[in-house]
Image (cartoon, rainbow over all chains, first blue to last red):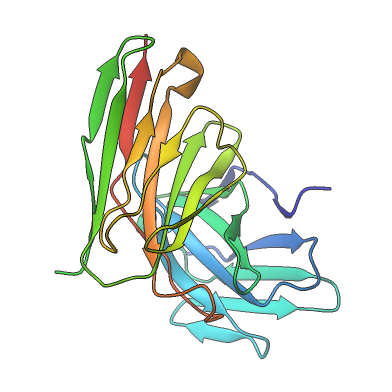
Length: 109
Length: 115
């Protein structure tokens, strides 16, 4: 079983749409969770951390369900500039970050 | 400006010719890591370092070496490159993996082609 699994997509949505990405992780000892964004051929950058209580940053909402070992990212009112690959990332303290393979989003006008 | 730098950014080489990709960070981070990214396989960790003189293997260490003689530098060495090492390589650093919510900062990437 893969450690961090994501639907690769691509998700093709029009501007203004709401889109949700899901991610599951296999290690119940995982302690911290993130969504990174990666533009084509560029380095990944932190989009947001994901906390147990859920958290929101503008149009982006992240949720964590520890019981189901499931993380989600919701993007509201999609913009053209949201087109990118979104990486689900999990950390067990003291060890390496584990990256999912990413979900590709394409927002069109 | 806080950053991770890598050099070179692009490199085309031939099988067997030793090469080094440098990585440097100016944030006084303890943790540094090398990844390779290949289509369909995502980011895979090659080696990481928890601090000076402390390095360990990641998921795909074969064919690579690293060293961490200074806190800021973490070079990746390919002693005898082969075509299957053609990839996009990222160096990253973070403050300390003992801290849970600990952002990892990535360098701009090195695109390596081995002929």
